[in-house]
Length: 150
Image (cartoon, rainbow, N blue to C red; front, side, top):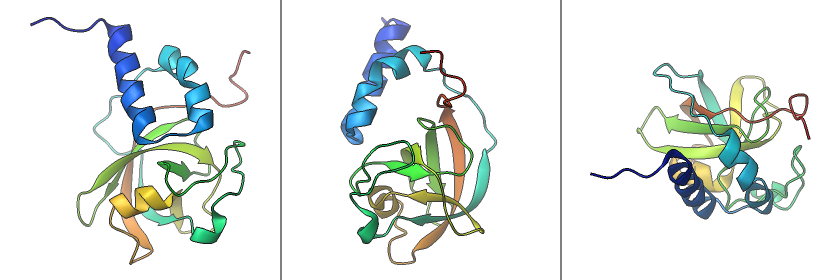
């Protein structure tokens, strides 16, 4: 059975991600993500705790990364991780999971570890409760502004 060359496989993977979570800033950085994409393989979660999600009134505001907040995108706010970090978020109560990109800072509430977009929260089935116990697994660490060479 023939396998795709690694670069072609990475581009195909990123194309699927961008289609599932369209964002102008995400699309603009697709080439950079392609070249910097090095999956972090780990069986232990990066972080476990309580997640919340952005409320409807936040839609249209600018995130800390400069992107416009949209409830339709699979994005998240995290206090420490660099912008562009890809996270696999799993709702520990029902096993549902989503892939999100960190593009903002937060959450503002101390006992929470991440704020999710409405779309991600809906897919995790946490809208009615407002919060959920989740685990975060790193898929790809983004590039912090201090690390950028361009």
